[in-house]
Image (cartoon, rainbow, N blue to C red; front, top):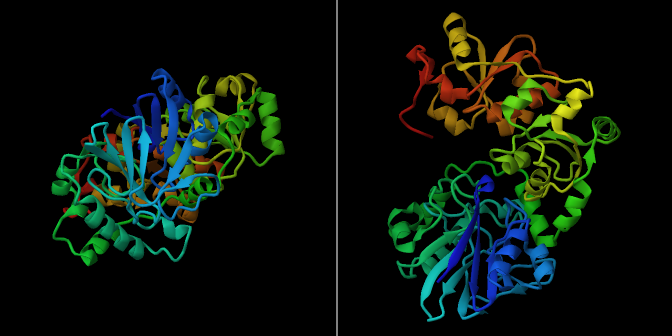
Length: 471
């Protein structure tokens, strides 16, 4: 049986495409649906179904646009209450895609409507399961997201449901089934997902902590809830968009893809409350940027950090990008529900610079310069990595203010003395630097290459602490 995984690394997301006898189905599509349509056209196939494993939190699904453009039927699992036309499947209901059969298996736990889809080939052989966020490779879906939308669905209740779904619906299935999850490592929908994006169910029964056969329900709940971090603030907003519906991406693109020269850009920025979002690399941003702009580089986990750092999902946005990246940036914003881009700087930052407009810079030092300072004095060092990274290894005396908490801890950044900023590699610290610049700080420097480069240098070993237990 042919199953094509369409993986998008920046949000660690997997959609799936299957086709047989001129009919196709898409599972958990992203907002930008053209690649799926072209894929079906390549097979001369008609997309018959759009299957959704659940109402997603970490991205806005493309189900509505895909159904509108192709005539496909949207399918959810039992208990789903979408605000648009869709089939709400019964547990065990069968769907035909050519000579293939898709069986809906209700597996509540991550959310109450979460559903696994069994893939059965033309000979009736069970091939694999598309598990959504019920079962990952090495992990299972976190059960604490739905309570941010429906308060009664506590994480304890959902974890108990997930235990039952795994034991009664998933683990009895054949070991040779292939597991096709919705996410891989890097997603905030689980704690410890593998970098692998498929596996056999039999191997997962051996290595996945959540499938240990002798684990009691109480132990499962305790283990699953232990160490859960606060989910990104945009997650509940994406859930509601996926439930209620949203504007077509075509409308979003029409509104956002508006080239503005430097004078027009400045005028729009002054007349609106738009956020200026600069998606260039950290090194380029540091050399020069438009005052009050925020840097979130498109070449890393762009969508996730936009969702973490821009609290208002309806915020109007003006873009500064590398030339040719404008459309991609608007699309990637829309994947997490930021639909209000209102224009971009034509010609990129160089156009602003050539127009003689005001610019700002971020001072940066090399890891070697940083090491020299450590030997001569005890500078104030602020580490914006995650707490788990900081607990694993950090500079003695450094203060940890994780990037996603920076807006709640601005008072902890000194204004009366210089300080040094770093993260792991320089991406997150430049986001922090841009926010600090916007809020009036200029008494700091950023370390290029971050902690990954700092620790390679010949500095006193007492400059590091490496706990033997990772919390």
